Length: 408
Image (cartoon, rainbow, N blue to C red; front, side, top):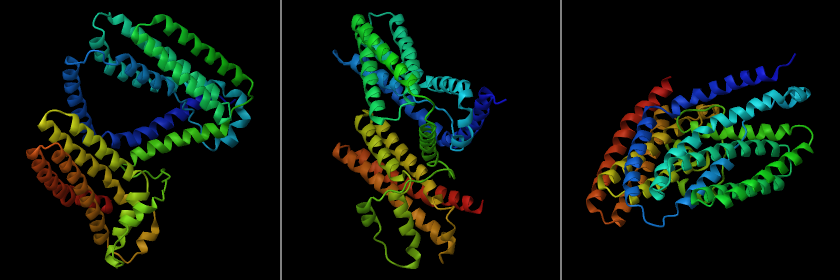
């Protein structure tokens, strides 16, 4: 007899194995060092900022919006796959324990976000409301857990609804109510917090009512949502290692292509053209590169200490260079490239040339930022340090890495 509970345990074991396969590449020594640096520096400046917290700071609004969005985003990981559309539909009446386990699993794996948010906003809460006892904040976190579970179950019920407009309307209403609940709790308006909680309960019961009117499970939507989440994970992992399961999304970006594709039509520049086009159109290389520049620029601008500015600048230059390394293997499964009458050395030189150029552009942009801030010494240091790092990383580490990967 088919046991859906045992089947979920098998599917979960396979899913965890797949995740752990790539997580060890994502959280390698380089990223662990960067994360430790960010957390340490962030905690230091966060504490300094709290000591000078301006009076009237909108703590309730910030915590309310953040907590409301966190509990509203509660996707259910069903772990269903495309073959299930054929083989499990016949056993749908026995899938109750499977989906129950999926909801429990989804709730447990999303708890870390609750704990991180609670730990991050705790100091801000107590700095803004020093006269309140710790039980008040713990009570807010307890409500957060309850609403997280409620939103998760409501999202599962709404997965039986095919109409996207109805699902979107329900999601917007619940987001607004969740934000209102936490805003009132932090503000100390307990009466309004109780009223908004009752309104959320009514929406919760409404979702239950309309879901019971829809027979069966919308299998194709479950498969599509789970596949979309895995593809998102694969795109992140692809920044650190080659992911054969990734279905690369190719975007036109015609104006950028026309800008970067101006290379001489000679045999030795074949891969210059290919890597430039791949950087602009394939995967999320361009998005990651631009986001790191923007985030790094904002941190450099707002961090007060000069040496911390320089460290962050070099760190973001390093992170961009390291994550762009996987671009070299972007077309490794395309056998047609082996037919090109271009040597492997030329291919490697083309990639390293592009990596050197992109890292150099980021260094120049950070240098211009220091110039705008009129920090002349820092401008010279980051220009010189970034250039030296770019040369050493590209000509040394990157060349050895892609040569070793090619031989392997």
